[in-house]
Amino acid sequence: MIKLSNWIAATAIVIAVAMTGRIASAQEAGAPNSAIEQELANKYPNQWQQLTPDQRQRVIENYQHWQQMTPQERDFARQNYQTFKSLPPEERQQVLEGLRRWRKLPPEQRDELRGKYQRFRELPPERRQQLMQRYAHFQSLPPEQREKVLERYHRWQSMTPQQREEMRQRFRGHHWHEGGGPGPGKHPMP
Image (cartoon, rainbow, N blue to C red; front, side, top):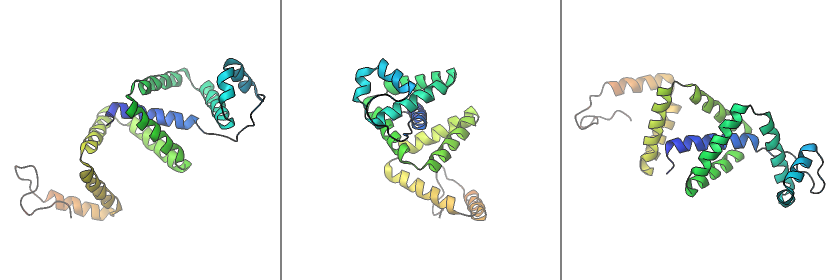
């Protein structure tokens, strides 16, 4: 299982790479047709010849993106890459699988996830820590318990604000016994 701090760093890598990994129309193999392509072909002749047209286009786009980054963004990317390289092989594989899933997402969904990530980064540090602890706890649950939690979450999300408030009132009305749960016969959730 990925440690939470590694997961966050890996997520940042996935987002950064996914943002720069868009492939435009493929170019035909052969003579370079742009200044960037010429520069890369001259600098790395053996590697360049082994790339497919799609791979060459991706390299060009990544290079262009890199050139447009601020020094701080480049430092952040380098740090994320070092973190990625330091992960155990199985965790690196999980990150790469996450990247493959990311690339398959529709652009609207990627934008939505980027927005959520940005909102997370803007939270006060103690709130971010609290959310990371909750996520770590969720990940530590057995699969069947995680499924139950997700079912309850989806049920909660489908409720109207009035239904949620009624549920909160019902929950507040139950007294918890010393064993850490509701008293006998009392269930805070339907």
